[in-house]
Image: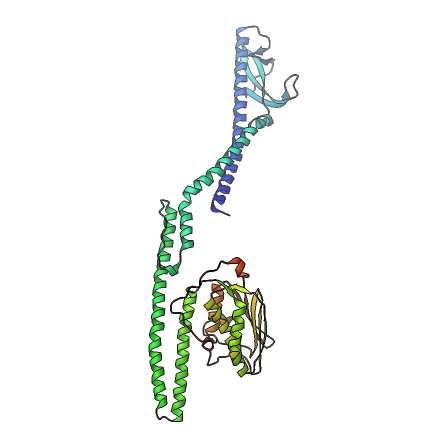
Length: 447
């Protein structure tokens, strides 16, 4: 529900509550004033009748149009000189019920005690309520209309800076390295919000720039000493050395190769997390899978691994081409590396998902933990444990679902596509090649 609708409902509830209470107060206030006015009038009539009796003026049992009843008392005057009684009655010849008020005044005139009683009629409560009912309804309609209309009009002015701030936040992209520009406002709360957003985004931009520079510098600076060490080891290997020294040199070379792969993979993972490769375009995924399977066919034959594939045609996915190739390289090289000799690999592609299954030893950790960095299921020395983290990051960038299970001796990795039929949903865009994207061969991307 929109903020303005919440405010409108809140104001309407307040208006309704005030209307109910004000109606009750108005009703009883009017009724009380009408009763008091009638009583005051009847008391005045009683006083006029007493003066006429005291003066000996003849009268016809009515004063000022009101019937007056005079009774001479034989008993002493009561302590209370005036009594008021109310009863339901009606005008003569009328079917409408009214309240009849009788005011009795006890007084002594010329050494005689009298009870002078006058009568009057006051409009009944339900008649009074029906009289103001129409006014209440029209008042409520007017309040409802004014609140509904004015809330919309005023919100466009008052909430305009807030909406502009939301728009600026929505358009903010940390990769542009530009600090956010927020609209000016005189509202105190919006000023505080803008200050907080400005401070938070500026800090994020600064930290992003620093992290990006550190990552690029670290990746670049590590490549030089690693290359130098590789060259020195190659020169050392060509010299006269013993078999034991040759074995040591080989182990060092493998460690350097692993270090180089870790450096490249971490740099790539950082760029993925920073969404530097988030460009999407319709990709013919079925063709890419077939080409990748052909590339890995020789590696499968070397381990006598049988391949079963069921690849649907015309499967287009909204996916960055480079990251699509990287995704398949990681998944397939992982399925080969951690497979058993004479094992099996099954690849199935539909318009909804890609499923890769392979035989292999059961992992000694939970399958969900294998998506974390440097987490390996069988602690293979040749695996750096970053591949699945890269796969998961690629899936998150493209809003894919990824699930990893182990059932009946089979590792099952499923990538679910939320966006299918890319040709009909997405317009074709030119791929953006990021500077410094590492060209890593398929085996070096293994998990």
